[in-house]
Length: 296
Image (cartoon, rainbow, N blue to C red; front, top):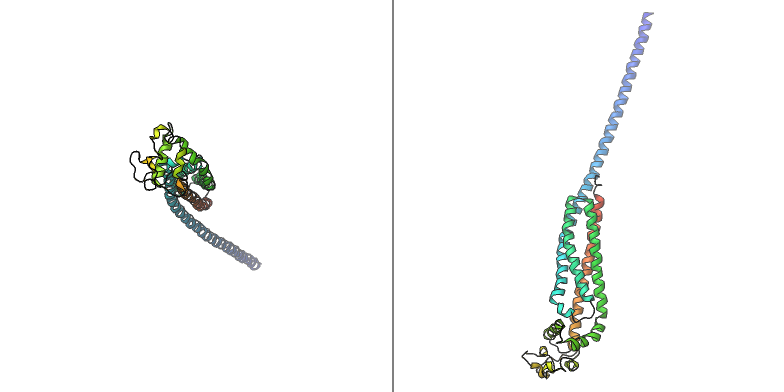
């Protein structure tokens, strides 16, 4: 009787031990499987994170390089605008429309903003601040619109220039040359005739209708002294081709060609830099998306 009970208990005990071992073994296997999956997930996560980090670093350096080139381009844009306003400002006074001057002012403004924006872009890139990147993107967009506007104005004026010069240049020269309160027109006309070696709007005979030439103040001059090949006092009393410039088409053709060439430069610089900015805006968007959300 005791043997049977002991045997039963032993059997129960043995089975209980086996069952316990089975249970423990099954639990250990489950833990091992879970840890393996965790390691695989961690490895995959680390790989993805590493790829994201590498991509972000590449974008940062691309955007930094762009900002450096963009900053230099801003200097070029501003230099073209300043050169137009300072070096050629006298010719602007001969034009009735302010479109030519407006294009130059827009370039100066855009160039100045570009140089400030380039510095801001470098700070936003290296500090990885999403808010700064948003501000940088908005400034890029504003500059883009300004430079496109300058290019469009230059193109519009390019189409209208010939008609404007035909209507206004001759009248401006005849009515305002050597007149009080129009000294800037006098300087502009003298500079125009000397620089481009021309005389009169369409020809030297245009000066016959000049208010100043018909007055006693001209002292019997037929043309201004600035028409002369070698300027001396009262050299404008002789209008012979050996003494004055007699160019076919007069000053109007010379001035038109000069302004047209300059408008091409303004338009090309404005639109060209604007197109480059599109690349910068794309890089900015990519870097913005690759950065983690800022903590609030």
